[in-house]
Amino acid sequence: MSSMIEVRQLQKSFGSLDVLKQITFDVTPGEVVAVIGPSGSGKSTMLRSLVHLEEVTGGSISICGKMLVENGSYTSSTAIREITSTMGMVFQHFNLFPHLSVRDNLELAPRTLKRESVQQITAKSRELLAKVGLADKADVYPSTLSGGQKQRVAIARAMMLSPDILLFDEPTSALDPELTGEVLRVIRQLAEENMTMIIVTHEMSFARDVADRVFFMDNGEIAESGTPDEIFGNPKLERTRTFLMRE
Amino acid sequence: MNIDYIIRISGPMLEGARTTVLLFLIVIVLSIPLGMLVTLMAKSTVKPLAWIAHTYIYVMRGTPLLLQLFFFCFGLPQIPVIGQYLVMDRFVAASLGFILNYGAYFAEIFRGGLLSIDKGQHEAAKVLGLSKWQTLRKVILAQMFRVALPAVANESITLVKDTALLYAVAVPELLNFAKTAVNRDFTVTPFVVAGVIYLLMTLVLTLFFKILEKRFKFE
Image (cartoon, rainbow over all chains, first blue to last red; front, side):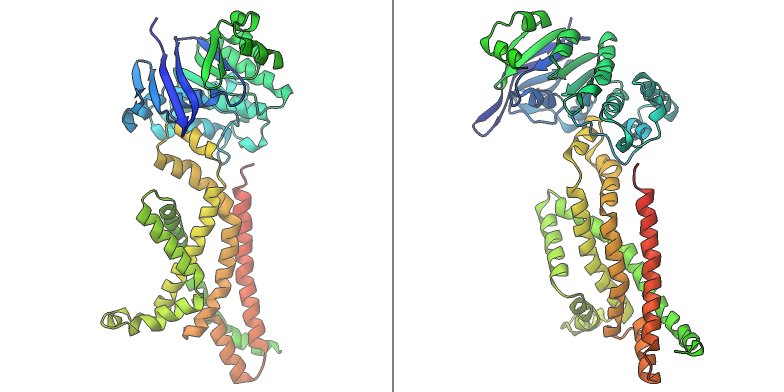
């Protein structure tokens, strides 16, 4: 099967510091990849570079067959927008728009981009809010929601543009432990619907449970990758073992 | 302080207050967009634009408003050669001075508002496919105005009181009428009446901004 995401020798450096070193991987349609690793290992930077929130200094990224960056040089800004618009992203700190109601958070981008009719957009926002269990919160402002509810709104917002790929940057790290469950349930449901996803996470049991493949990142590279059973059950590298023991 | 006297002087004083209110409205309506524009210029990646904006803010904030009013009312016509074309009605010249001065303060207030907005807001908008301009209009400015609202309210109330500086460039307004009446009638009453009128104006503004703040609480 052809790859949804192709990353080749991705590299990013600040001066002499290499944040990403020669990262290469593929993600196939419907696949769920969990990225684990210590803080500062480059997990978030790798994820953010896929949607052009970080500029890389070398290597290539291709999304659904289109080159976002080839050997370190980016395509035109219009093409960048077009390519990254096939991906949705969910942030650690939700990044909801505080001045807009929950419904308007969902509808702002589709209404601004005008790719669908207003009726289609409102129908879709209603459907997605119901899906994340927040149909009754459409008219409230984000400040009145709990962290778990905010993150579910953020997921619904990311789904509004019908992305082919969803990226999660530590979606539960800012939540109280008792609120992570409701968010993980929504992500799991998306996995069951064959959404292609890359999830940077510290939730090991969730990664083991929901991922098709796990990347262990350390020191700017993918040190080890494999099925959850391989990574969690029988890690090859000493540093993977050390990391998992600490978590 | 007898009531008849207060009623008698209230007429001309309210007449003077009209000039005060007119100046206030002109300055608010024009200096807020000007401040917005200067803020965007100061944030611009085009260096000369940013440089012009910073210099403008520095000059307008770094010199007395009264000096600026003198400059526009009495200074401009003295400039050799072009001065004769710069003779304006004193109210117009003073309005110009006020607008440029308040524009600089509003620019700084808005810049502060922009600084308070988390960079995650830009990132979320970008990932959702909004252009820089769409992000600015639909995500950033709305939040900036909300953050800036208390400071804008404060600045507006200062403006009401600063209109009294028109006295110094001999444009008849509220304070001017009060002073005339005090000199003519040998009584302090007109000053008290003027004070009450200023208080009424600032009360209306205070209530107006309270309502705005409540309306844009986002809760």
